[in-house]
Length: 129
Image (tube, rainbow, N blue to C red; front, side):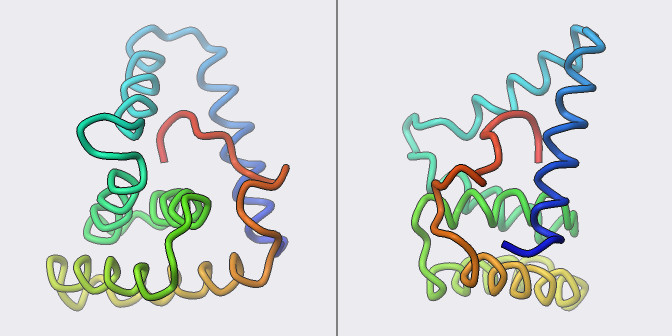
């Protein structure tokens, strides 16, 4: 796994823990809502994570893109499925999405080169992207 990916995961986990320990009820509730939104329901978690990835591309949030890309990889998306999702984000968001698409593909390449999803390097499936 790349240093960049390990740093992203470690920073995200550390800061989520710090934020939650502050005990601010509305923030903690939001984090809980975010976590629950991606659990299986009428739509399965995989479908929800793909939707999160596409939305994140359109919103141009690199941290969110990374989080949802990692989760989608863990849930078994193939490169062909990623590129279908990337295309939807590109169509909805237009050319402004292209720099984020580049970074998403670079991260996908890093994930493909690293350990299999679901290993102990897995980011926690908690609070917001």
